[in-house]
Image (cartoon, rainbow, N blue to C red; front, side, top):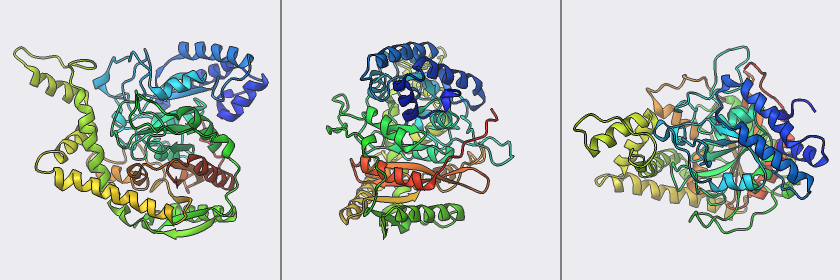
Length: 495
């Protein structure tokens, strides 16, 4: 087999079981691809020694039979996950040199199941961003190009390194995290599949926190079947995380029948935004027709509080971030500023945090501190929490009325060029999350499936939103949509 790095998880797993390929061969193919793709800046901490050691162990395990599905499969880990003895910086200068003495629950579960870690992936600093331009490592670059244009494009954010690596076949799959769309938006921008599970389905223990009531880990893969395989390994109850759900994890792959006859798919009228590109509108209509042709019933629905989701999110997320990031003060670990003679603890905090945090993180910490301050707590934070409750109820009402899943666009546009969204107007960047933040606010599962190309040849994705804890059914609906869309486009290798 040539170009083993181009395989998906299911294909590679089956080849490993048949003895057609070894994990060491798969891993070496990916490591070579990573070394040749420096221009994408996707992998920021390579771990070839760990990868080959785990690959050898996986080959032994496979020979003995009964190896788990993920055994021997090379994957990338987003830099937000703590990995024992390996730099885990959350793409921030303030965590420079931090090598945890422990492993995040999700990465531990993947390792226990025999997955091979190739290294750590680029991301927006502390997962704050929609374009992977806030990273201390520099921008991650999309493997896609607009026609013959050489302009570098964003792979999306915050899981931009994960999206670029999977799309460019540097790894078979990758972990991502999603606080307001950070798995689904980059997946849509790079023509891959990304699922954010129900809040509490995957443990958050050992994942550097951004907004604790919104953060959720999930897989970023080459197709829906691969997402089902990897998600099953990542899920499960964790007593170390108080928000982790004590629920059995179903066999997600076994639920992929593609049969969605009789399912009711909701189309929310509030997602028809002013100024939405005609291509996105057309793709959305085509997606609905595909599901209808597969036997589903298409139903117009209303989610009336959708228009308040973005402002509510950009109050709640920064508020939680300002609390979570207060621990980075230069006292115990990470970066500490050099102090002048006579400087005290206050100066140390100020200098360390101004040097260690990038502009976007500083902006969000300041917004969060402001909305939590005594005079504004009720006017902003409490009001946003009430809006969040109303958004959650909108979804509950729709699902109670018999809707099985909701179809929406994943992003308001295709990928844009790096540097095209200016620092001068951060709100323009925040609008990228317009279709995704409601899912985090309501704690629901959501998946982005590549469904077509725009006129410049860039991928566009559709989003399906499911009932809480019903990832199996959601994946099956996505599987049906994926089969109908038949998306097979890949970026042309320019790197």
